[in-house]
Length: 305
Image 1 (tube, rainbow, N blue to C red):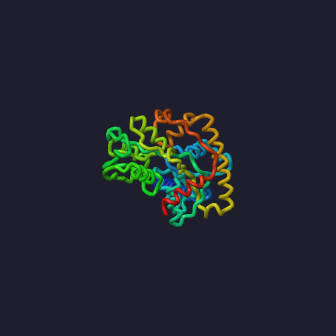
Image 2: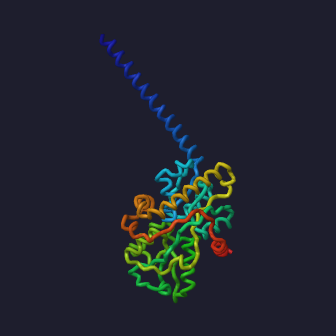
């Protein structure tokens, strides 16, 4: 009897171990299958690199509210903290499009990355000085540090400011790629000035920091969404792009109708700012997709010639 009982227990344990083993391997197979499915979906989706700035708001809303999906186009965003990360993704064929500026895009084109501008955006940048630096005019940037990022409109504006003001001593341009880190460095008194877009510029102004230059005063509309030409040769990608732009235009209309405050939660989630900043944002208008002005493209192109 004792031998029989021992045999039954042994068989039950063996069956249990076998069952557990099968369950584990089955889970592994399911996991691999799931990863393959997700990779396939991602490959087929329209992938766009974004940064945590207000020019990306129509894209964030489109994804957050499933508007692209409802229209029949699967859009996957690659959220990054800096435009330079977007350059890497677009140059490496990891995304079909990215939100950028004309200075960056024209440099990439010059370096052999064919791009198509599918729309301009409402992006603008401000040079904001640390209130503790006691800088009220551009020529007072002499011997000061200004945070920007190379090969971009922030680099262009920093150079424009220095060249126009001709400060007595050098202005030290410090490369800080991530826009939110750039803002933190101003707030923490690690930088004398920064070149920054919205909504980070609003946060800086709320903290009593002064605006020295605004790109809108220079009549240079630099913000764009660009796609790889090679990707758009595919008929399926062309169809995706048309649907994407249809939704983009509809979202722009919605923002203009209800205001940015209506989308406060989206702005806070995707841009990392608080509600106080959202409430203080200027009245931003969003426009239907349209190519950038020829004179803006020419201005950016000349910067690299």
